[in-house]
Length: 266
Image (tube, rainbow, N blue to C red):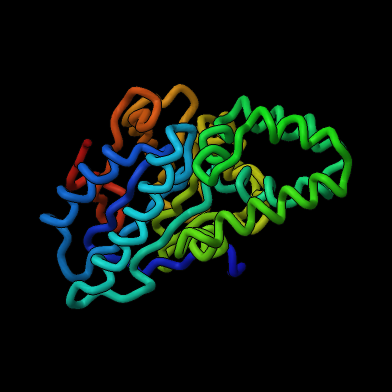
């Protein structure tokens, strides 16, 4: 399997956390409850969208909270570094592309598109005014390159933020083939290694999955159009409670066949 796909050893219980969207308070509330329930042998999968469109302070605090809880989780007896996985969400895909905008054929339009999808809060979090950035994106490759360099420096000044971003996986799968974990979308007609950017932008394709995908019992995602809460179907499971957008953060404990065994909400 590709290096961008994370293998997860089968377990009696795998915890999955839905889209966070920079909601620091909701993440802390879920982490407090998770800390009381985690047992040796559990796995933990975060399903993307850690950075968000909240206040700058909230976004930074959210990433710091994730890094702290990762350290706490790994420190538990019987838990290994490979038992925790972070998927790349649409927010993280944009954050990566944001640092390469000097290579885009139309950087101004790309940044405008990112603004409609919540990149403003992330820009503010690292000390940049989105309106000023918007004007920079129309000043040519040299000015844009200078800005992306400044942004990368600002990201690196926050310990662990760049490392987390570079360590994110596009999707995850249990090594017994029973479970697949994605951020928002998946094309049921293609193999996992052939999804291109469907994981972030193919939400409607995920909705269309009504048949078993290879031998997989269930496909689990953390972000859905309209943040529609818990959606349980025969072969899919969607957990987006609208954290960071006026709703709550959801986390589920699921067994090796994708059945829900425990539920947490912020």
